[in-house]
Image 1 (cartoon, rainbow, N blue to C red):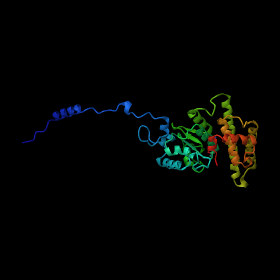
Image 2: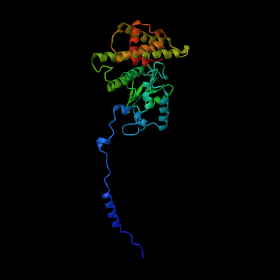
Image 3: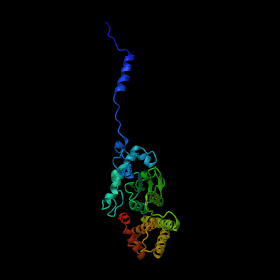
Image 4: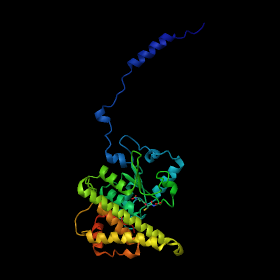
Length: 309
Ligand SMILES: N[C@@H](CCC(=O)N[C@@H](CS)C(=O)NCC(=O)O)C(=O)O
């Protein structure tokens, strides 16, 4: 005799009933179980987000272009090994403020990436803004020399210049005044660059002058580094004259005792610091009022921490 098999319709009814009679799964109450909303700090610097384990950042999105994975990981490795922020005790060495500098590097999930060189006088302005506004956790420094590692710079900035900043939105911002103003305007509580009025135009003009001094000083220095027979005395004199005249004018106009501090004065100090280091004629800061001004600005931790050794 053949065994009787339950018909398909009986099986179907049994399945429906058992599903209906099962107690409903307990869902957590939203107010009890939902994870807290992440704070900005969590978003930028926590290892594990409030919503679970940290996800690997999409570096291609951060960099705004689709670079091959292998090249990204090589650069990322270099970034992890490189000193994060210039420190008073010497770039690359841990210092009393080094621990703070290194926070962004250790978390590795900073939202913005600053391609810069810790010795760059242009980048120093940006470093100062980062220090003043406490943005270390938001910005990861990729310490790079464009001439030595063009492959790390040129895909993102065809000019081959640093500094440039890749924002969290994947925007690439170039030119130190632009980057400094972006960080100041977007993240600063008290603006270092006045938003409007004569103070703004004065600060912007100071920045332009300061960057002009740095540019001329770099040209002089680079020319002097060429073999003696190939150097142009006329070229050196022309660019040296710019530095000399601008420093002389600053000596006449700057008030070393004024309590002001803005991005224009930061830029001026960066230019003085650079010429004093790179052009022997200005070593030890020969202009007494400029020397006093520079010493006053160095009292600010942001200026002291970013002074290249
Ligand atoms: N105006 C630019 C100048 C940047 C600049 O010239 N940076 C230098 C390093 S200090 C550089 O990248 N030099 C390489 C080159 O010009 O090829 C700024 O303020 O950011």
